[in-house]
Amino acid sequence: AATTTFRSWSSRSAKRAIWRVCFRAKVFRPSSRPAPRQNTKQRKPIMAKYDKSDIDRRMQGAVESLKGDLSGLRPGRANPSLLDPDVVEVFGAMMPLAQVATVNAPEPRMLSVQVWDKANVTAVEKGIAKPNLGLNPIVDGQPLRLPMPDLTEERRKDLAKLAGEYGEKAKIAIRNVRRDGMEALKEDEKKKEISEDDRKRSEDDVQKMTDKHVGEVDDAVAKKEQEILTQ
Image (cartoon, rainbow, N blue to C red; front, side, top):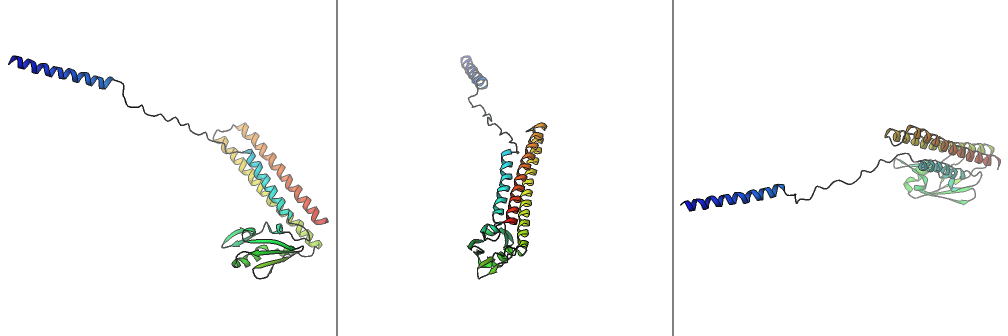
């Protein structure tokens, strides 16, 4: 009986020893689990909103658009670009004439406006009429005819006035771009992307670009007015 008891106690002691060894090995050995992945992806830096080249490009675009409008003001001659600035109300929305009709000059003193959708003929007629310039469309079915009026002294003055109006619209567009540039600079300074000195220097650049392009507008308008009044 004593021998049996001793063996039983020895067996239990051995099991406890083995258990302690296994437990310690499990607790203290380095974990075999992979270490959690660290987020190594870097945050994208906040980009400054102000872009000098974009400001200059947009201002230059306003000047080029003006030159296109002025090219249509050819005294006494029919030129399809004369109607490029025109917009018409179609289905409750204002759309450029070029998106609803085709304009041609079949004769030196006649424009033809081919409306694509017959339902838009009346809207196009209203949109292209310029009574102050003597431009009154004649509806001839789906196409419209637009005879060029005689080039009187009064009409020359009206055309010169229209050139000035085109110039004012271009200046407004340039000043709107200037405003966008100034606001972008203030936002960049607020976000600590640029310093106060950087903002002031860039504001000077924006103003110089504005003055330059406004000067180009004035030159283009003056040249066109001289052409209209003397040729």
